[in-house]
Length: 309
Image (cartoon, rainbow, N blue to C red; front, side, top):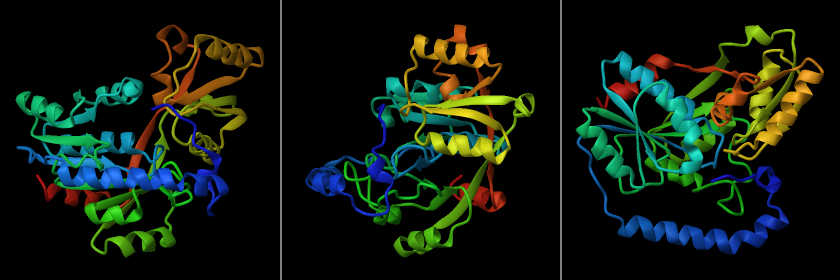
């Protein structure tokens, strides 16, 4: 789904618009609750690692899935990525396919069955926490420390798919950002046994643009996080431009950005996910940031994975 997050989602207090949308949020909760009761549950023949979220978009699921894939390969496993098929999410598929096989289907269970036929012995279920039809062996929920829960309300009153109480179903939480004891305390209130880990994004190809003037643009869940990352690495940003999540760039828009950058001898810079949504004939005029995901207490996190292998 391509959308722009309403500004009132990010506020710490309940706004008039949130209050107005309460009835719709309540109906959505009821439908989700009834779905849990009647849905058929599948136990898979291979271990399933689920990487999901309760905050919509921009929590770092895709790079974490890639990092888990690399960990599993280092453990001599034959992992695959499992996804529900959405045409608008092809950028994430392309990013994961650079690392390994991706199986996708309108029903995730059918994608898993196909992966098993193709000799997979463990699956990384990308964005499947709310899919109650599949039994998970390890459930990991991603948050971004800066956005956290937004206004703390469920859609459409706020940015949450589920309340924080849903963490009772999770085994681990991954927080991208700085250590935050207040967030940790809120998590533990809902699940005393849950393991909490932190991640940081490490850009690996910024040397070519050091000391250059940069125009940065992004169409991801939280574009401001990308811009802040560049600032943390002292990139000289002249201008920032935000687009909706999973935005389908038009040639004219990109050509205008390219012309603007070339006119002033600026570097045009975006995320790797955005870069993969750009037509190939325009890519040579646009740079992207490649990142590695650094997991704090990495060995302890790997031990959690080993428990299900």
